[in-house]
Image 1 (cartoon, rainbow, N blue to C red):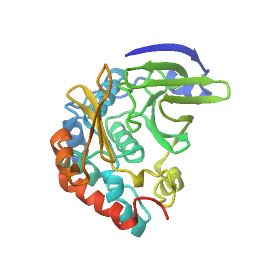
Image 2 (cartoon, one colour):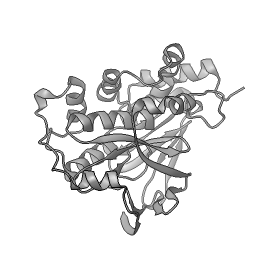
Image 3 (cartoon, rainbow, N blue to C red):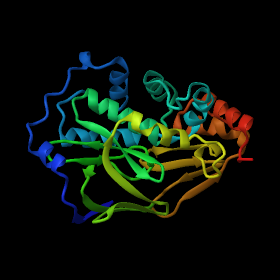
Image 4 (spheres, one colour):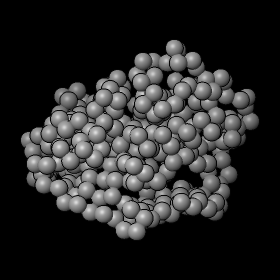
Length: 292
């Protein structure tokens, strides 16, 4: 993997003020963290530490390696969300599903979870939006604002300076983060192009966006897909609607999986609870695999 710095954009006065401020406080002791945060941190294989850019990068890396991008829990949270108006799981349920059942989430739940963990660890962290339809995290270490993204299934294993361009290229994809006078444009090949709004946001600011991401009638909604992806044995591996792909350096290794075998195969390959797969399939079958 290679990264090249290409250009920079002058940060805002608010950012300059934060950069010039005092160093971040010492990190909390494990005993002062909420139980769910302790469980998540343990799952990542890390101990509490003072906030720093190095610690932030370790948190992002381990999160990317150990917590999957998946639609199973998005489907499970759909019907409770229709009843309550909140499509995101309770934080304790979110962590419990990660630790005990091999779950993860999509950008909304993963970004919220990372931001909450960072805040408990003493980081200054907020949410950000990419348009269309993606959520990530803004973190403010003494070195300046950084972009952290654990909900994009992209090869991002550290945080990056928010107002500096960079590019990554792996055998799986090219990822281009370009800071331009008119804004920050993020392009994946293969994949979409989005524009990042660096404005710090609270979760309550994103209610309408989260609701829109859970509209079953949208043809391209992730609600119509059974997806699970994370690194397995050093190889990024994904399951998408019956296609299991291992992204090997030479070329992808593709295996077709029969629908009835999916719970067993996902349990064997990823260690996910097969009942999560069955429950997600049941929700999708109840509401229809494609919009009317």
